[in-house]
Length: 350
Image (spheres, rainbow, N blue to C red):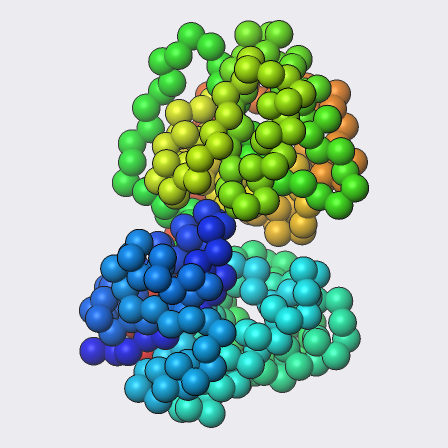
């Protein structure tokens, strides 16, 4: 049986990355036993308890080296790992892991990666040089593939796939919302100097006056709760606020029970798509634009310039055409799901 070391942004309480971990573990368990999988985590105790899996502190280099001595492959499960917008530290951490794994004679497999933005020219060169040592790369959108090819990564290494979370609870059957009122869920984040709470509060108040329920959920609890509290302060108790730390399944169940999602967080949009719930996307990063395009939808506005009138009208339009929106989204998701098979094929070749 193959021994796998699994890397990603796990153990930090971000529901998107935790959902990626769940889906990749599901894939890996088709080729090996749970005892042969070890996860690098920012909170190894919590990850180990939550998934009943072996874990290593992602910052413990000695433990990582020792694990790679007995591993067959280092697998990156997905996410936006190779980018230098949040910091340079992140991209160099993952590139270091790749080089270390190759020194230790491991295969390196990168699955469903969202690449970039990589702004620093030196980082682009190091990324290209490092990724040309990797055994397999699948990317979650065509723009990531084009970017890697443009910086000099061998195109024969790269296959187009999709984010694994598009298959989250794919076996669930759609049940039409029987509630009399329409329900809209918001998954938001703060962004630099954008007055997100004020503008979204304005939109929500108009929806509520139109007899539409508004629900607010945190996807990255440590960051999103503050924004939810601000909106609660602005519009009071006329909306529904989820202020507890949600599990992936709890968040999915909430979204699945809605008529529409308004999402800034990428994986809230992917949850909605997986559940067959139409969405309105507000972009803070090109990955949001790329996902919306992959399911033949458009971004309504940028988080840096939220047009409240445009956003309000787009929400009403999608609610009024919910059945058509749902059918179009479902057709696009099925096409996207077909691309995931390349990940399974690659894992079976380890």
